[in-house]
Length: 397
Image (cartoon, rainbow, N blue to C red; front, side, top):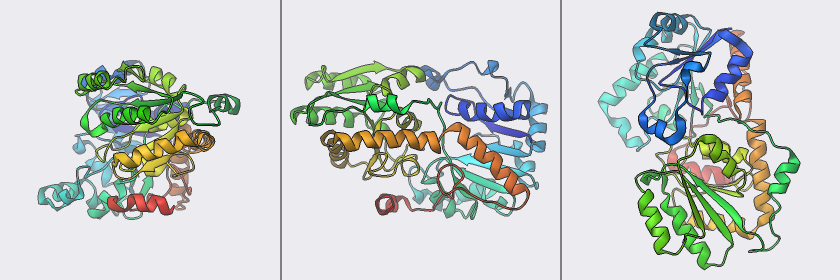
């Protein structure tokens, strides 16, 4: 079996999945990178030496080999890229092609009325709905967007991003979650990680810190990242006398971010609907953190079972977010149990090795005309839920 993945560039969120396929297939797995990584991503710590990864090919250097792999591979995985011309022949063939996509209409589904946009979506997606072309949805709001253009009927599955999985013993996780039996008995560690930009609402974390301090909670907030709002946030922290409660780290390499998460009890993720997935949620769950996540984040409905392995809050509402955090602080046993369940969610279903195994199994079944899908996790059926109804859907679940 030969599998090729093509995308703009490889990054640390894709490498574990690619490594898992390479470990199984060897040279029969290749990743085609179509363009260099943006400087902004490199400055954030995403830079890596792709030339040293054995399965990575560079389109501009090996164009003919890349074209051959695109046409001939048993499975072609297609991520985000500008070069639709490269896969046009493949999409009209009888070979299995699987797209991996975030939202079409991240800023609002009202954009679906654009005639020019609809024509492009028809050419790229809808026109191939009768061909063996499937969609892996990197976010719970993806199916609703694609259903508006009538693409991939009954061929949309849950998927996402799969950062490095780190295994911990039950004893290690239990030691982390020995919380105080009563409020204020132990200083609780809270982590927020991402770019300091408006869509990620880092100011929510400072507002939360200010309010929790006034309410007498014992905690410390770890703010990892940087960006256009950094100086503003640091100035506000100083003005509100929060410097003892907050540590600002700046941008760190992914492995250093994980080290901080592994020492924290609660992970706070405040991005709005513009966050397609949010891989730090995977990383924090893998680290055993109890999650508090905006329901609008693409990863939230796929990864979080409210009250079991984390908590979601309603549509970017600050007051609801603070309420969920205070619940965890006031109920340490429940919070510890959610952190343990969060780890199990990643260990059992949402890791790169399991995603790769399910891809191979999907192909074997598809090849004999029998598609059997798991009930949860990668390659399970992605339900079509309207964005405005997602919170209620999750509460019913």
